[in-house]
Image (cartoon, rainbow, N blue to C red; front, side):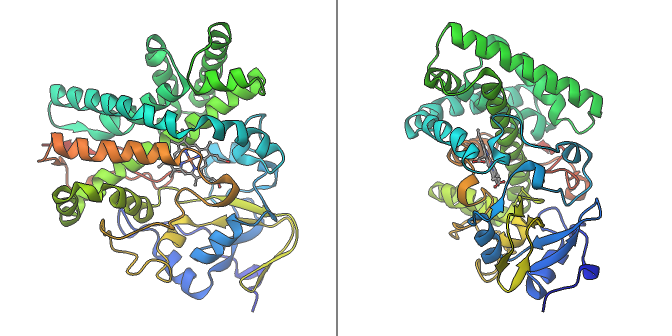
Length: 399
Ligand code: HEM
């Protein structure tokens, strides 16, 4: 029976521990995997927690990603500000044919050859961070010294940001990622990044390079404004997500010493371990969201045209009908089929790069510091539960 609008719930928050999603998601998934949800602006939409329904909606072109149709299920000021149609190039919030026009040339740039070519650089970047940590000595914050800089420097490599400009790039992006930044500081940071990309593109137009931005310029399909926004999208989509996986993933391994020992005893498990951490931690803990373009029936519920649907990745990834014993971190299991990179048309474009970063960074960290441990009791580690990407705010470690 379809739930009445007056029975709508609010988006579940409040986690029982640092690694487990809100318990309400599990009871919802059991009772009502497609449930009525009240959005902060008073509109009523849906929250989907079952794996099969989340996957089906992500694969269904009758559900739109257009930003002007979407609604955010939680009252985050920065996310609430991003309203209206997506800027040219921000194809994550577009439908075909606009989405296709950007995604196609971008996919052509994310080649196996380019990803392979980045591996030695990712190793070098990781080694440099580990050297810096060793030099600074314990205790230190693993987030600011390791988890944040690695993805940032890797995106510099991918885009082809010259060495001399990397400090400026990191400075501009750190204000964006800093939780303490005021809306004013965020606006300033956004303007700084836009002018940074504008200069970078001008430089590459004058002096062509063999990196991703250089390749897109050579294609000649995109305007400067589109290139700027594509650069910003790659930064926004790739930096914070990977950084939180590195920070929260390290915390999870330290708090599950049996799993860490299993992984260290058999390094060939790293690919499995990375997939399992992606599944278990589900750092994309709010969205993705979609809007129905017409009336659609999904698993017995009628979703009306115009209604917004929030798809719970933690709900789907902990669904016992898809993953046996889902609340257990098990680095030996095959976690393929998790939805942390999404599914369908918008499935993460940078997933291979993110995987390579994690497959390199975790083992190098634990090889360099076999005695790595938390420098504070686990309960004192501050979590990012009110941010769009879940993770740790800081991770004080010693060795
Ligand atoms: C662990 C790290 C990452 C996670 C968990 C993640 C997750 C996701 C998810 C869930 C989506 C789909 C959003 C939707 O359907 O609305 C997505 C899209 C996207 N991601 Fe990632 N991502 C990660 C790393 C990266 C990296 C490293 C890059 C690039 C350097 C990247 C670039 C993108 C882009 C461009 C899109 C939009 C694709 C489209 O709309 O067609 N991501 N990502």
